[in-house]
Image (tube, rainbow, N blue to C red):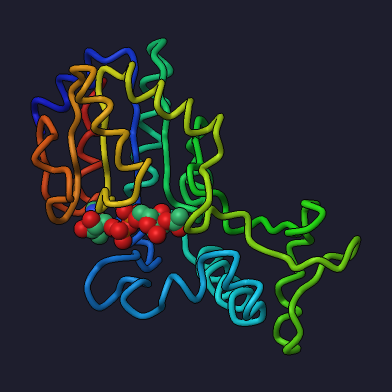
Length: 247
Ligand code: OAD
């Protein structure tokens, strides 16, 4: 921790990758944690791809409407607020701060983070799979009627604006994330199992460029052995300690 604080005090460029673990303390389920992870209870192949939407639109839309509701009901936790605070401190001293998130829950933005790159989209937004137009936020509520939500312009099926299995990440966003990782003096990888690529490659890019990369997680991730340092513990408890000292 001391070494990380010293590195942050000297850093001009900071990049952070977050995963579902940072929102766990807000009460949003992760994907792979035993017992509580979403992929322990639900099958991604039945919910998180276009084929699933075409085959069973009501089920897929209802599942995303349920997850969206959870995200709206939950609030950012001390970990989210600490990262927003860290950004302010780094920017105030003339540095750059990039928060790259795999999360679709918007809790970082609600905590006040500004320079956020959403690698896997945003569950609050929906769009039509045929014409691509934004769909009204309330549209998915209509799945309660048993009919799939459809586009008011072309009658196409509505989907959430999240990256599904088999889909490309938004190209520009991924490129910006890779540049931030390669050029950061300090890179933090927080609350991610680091098994989903290309997101999981970002901490490794930082290491390949000889940067100081630290993992913060309740247990070691798949790439922990390649990190400069691993701090074991809850993000909501560790991160506020980083902001308690002047940077
Ligand atoms: P996972 O569910 O795979 O991993 C969550 C990680 O958070 C695990 O390594 C936990 O040990 C850790 N964790 C849990 N509670 C924590 C806490 N309080 N503090 C710190 N760490 C904690 O979630 P992701 O790595 O985000 O993709 O999953 C990556 C992608 O897989 C997701 O973005 C999603 C999923 O399929 C898409 O939806 C495209």
